[in-house]
Length: 287
Image (cartoon, rainbow, N blue to C red; front, top):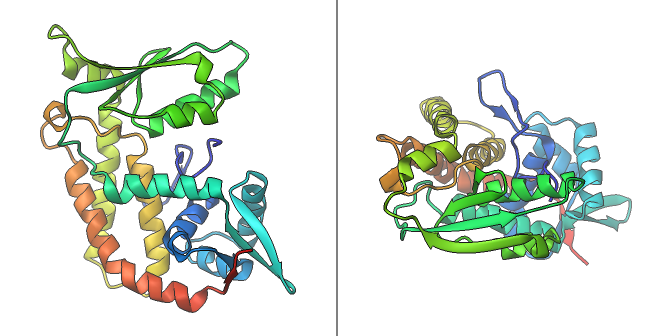
């Protein structure tokens, strides 16, 4: 994966209300994850995609260029039906979306079940491998790792990133261990040195504030657009959070209330967004 996919929205700009403004590709994959992933072998007409993403402020030209870029990157496949062009998910995109779905819907924002083990990953790459180093760091950050030292990264629990390392072609350059910290180790200090807790907490607080206000406002007449923004913003919020052990987090950690707000809005928009999508989307069987 390159650094502009749905699992890395770190360069998103701030919107006028102080929240993140996800890039078109993040919204595009959120769209496919919400409305295509579970529908089997289907592809969607480009005009339908333009309509839906237009509801969240993405213009037609941006949609078309994003579709082309995602095809070139192996995330989408084209399929012509008469004079219309349809787009469907590739196996690579399915893996990305399933990973994101697990992070969003299965894992909690707070790790209440930590068993005391850490995963340590050491790597040494040639100085000229800047792209490989960037890709590895980006994927490790999404998987919950932080840099304990420059070439030694750490994550709470047993984290299996062997497939990620193999996909990047770096298996021969990486060593992975699982271990407990010795009693002399100050785990709280190690966490503060390894992760920017203030920044992570600020994301949760801002998310909770924005979407709590949304819950208190008038009902939206565009559930599909609301849900796309919700999922994209939640991914942006959680992407730097390694799900640290609850016992080692600062008091009143804001992840839990933010997650509750996310699920409340998600529950309210799920059925209306799905109904709207089925009315709007022109689909075809993916060949």
